[in-house]
Amino acid sequence: SQQGEEDPQALSIQEGENATMNCSYKTSINNLQWYRQNSGRGLVHLILIRSNEREKHSGRLRVTLDTSKKSSSLLITASRAADTASYFCATAAYSGGGADGLTFGKGTHLIIQP
Amino acid sequence: SQTIHQWPATLVQPVGSPLSLECTVEGTSNPNLYWYRQAAGRGLQLLFYSVGIGQISSEVPQNLSASRPQDRQFILSSKKLLLSDSGFYLCAWSSLRDSPLHFGNGTRLTVT
Image (cartoon, rainbow over all chains, first blue to last red; front, side, top):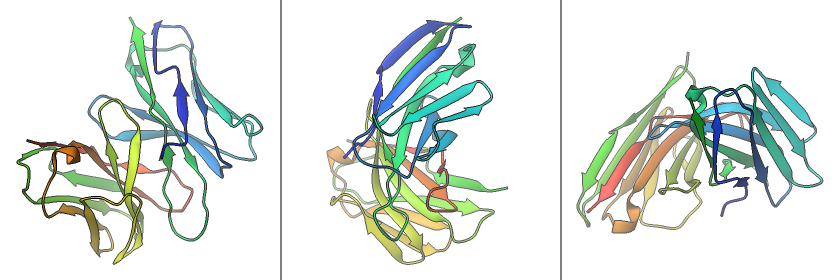
């Protein structure tokens, strides 16, 4: 079953504007990760935020995490045409031994208009 | 540096035929390995994961199976494909339990 739900499902903005995507989840987590997927390709890891962190930055990316609301947001500042892709949040909630794997949402399809 | 190879990139198979998708990782030892499936317009569904040779955990009961014959090799198989097996299959690895996943470029499987 899918834990994370991204919002909006699709987003189209002009180049140079900021893009904000949201993710909500249902159960307690150890960490939350954001990934990017270009059409027809594998996913690329962007950023990981742990459950005891509230905000994290990486270049033009800013991620926030609110565990009380079970939500996260990804902000891409000064967007570029090359940022056009689908963005997924994924949660890690380990219940025991082993790798368990991440649970992914359905993603936000971001289109940057040049 | 670590790399992950997944092949083939695309595959068209008739219903009832067998399937074998292979994934190998280079540059690391004892990785955690994963198979995900992505249906059109949907998120990723975890199919199998492995923490070591011969150790396979299945997340979704289905027509597929996985094997890990070597430390850095992960194989996804089916004896008889169904139409519903069509999708985009992604192999991934991680070094630690909560570390980021590194994905291959995927296999687009179409069952006709």
